[in-house]
Each structure stands twice: as C-alpha cells, then as structure tokens.
Image (cartoon, rainbow, N blue to C red):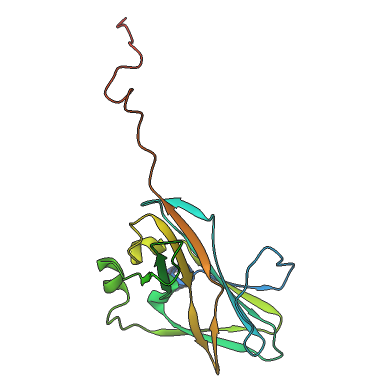
Length: 202
C-alpha cells in the first residue's frame, strides 16, 4: 500500500513538472502556410521572410501596443531560430519616430525606456531553439509586454518599426510597420467640473 501511495505521489509530481514546463515555454506556434494575403512581409532572403504586425495602426499615448512577429520558411530546408528565454516576451527592434512628415530626412531612433534597458541589458539565461519546417510559418506573439513599454513612444507622431534578425546563414528584415500615436482628446471645457445630472436622495 505504501509503495502504491509513493508511486501516486511521484506521478503527481511528474505531471506538475510537465505542466509547469509547458506553461513556461514562450508563446511560439509553428503553423502550416495558409492564405496570408492580409500579412505584409519583408524582403525574401534565401526563401525566408518575416512580418511584423499590430492589432491596429493608430493608438493613443500610453495605450498598450502588442506586436506579432512571423517568419515564413519558403525554402526547402529546415530553418532554426535560437533565442534567449527573455526574448519570448519581445525582441529588440529598430523604431524610428518621424517628427516632421514634410521632411522625411529628419528622424530620430527611439531609445529604450529604463524598463527596456533592464530587459535587454546583461541578461544571461538559457538558450532555446525552434525549427521551422519547409512551407511553415513561425508565429511569435508578444502579448505580455507592450513594445511602447520597452521603447519611449510617449510623443505623438508616426513611428516606423522593423525587426532584423539572423536566421542561420541569412539576415532577415521584417516589413516596416507604421504606427500612429495620437494625443487623447481633451475634455469639453464647458462641461469640465460641472454637475451634469443631479440625483435626489431617496
């Protein structure tokens, strides 16, 4: 009886360990290629191309911006992606803020926030690898950390975001994702501080 109870406890511990490992894995999904007409891709490099997308094109200042990164393997070979564990939350990107739309040469590369500096700092962790089979897509959901928490996107304007990453013997750059940041609308000054409705006590 004691041996049976010990075996049951060991089985439960093993199940808990397996579930813990599964839930700690990054949010990666490898899916067969389907009709992807709505996805904007970057240039093809030796049969591999990447895409960066957001839920919408316009956000208010401070509104969370969650991105999705995809890699499509159109080659005949298996492609391996190596990444550190912290990179399951977000990858380092190039973000350019155009201050003047009429003068495209005037642009500023957006710096990391203090949180972003700590996130992409001297972080040492274990490396993992994911393989993409031919004619498959790797989808990487960054739904834990908004990109505007990592990068200073506190000013209104147009932001151009791209992601360059080395995938085995090729450097693949995503499309340029354009995000517009807008200032929240100001409250109506005539109604501000005024009582709109009076509720009589019962």
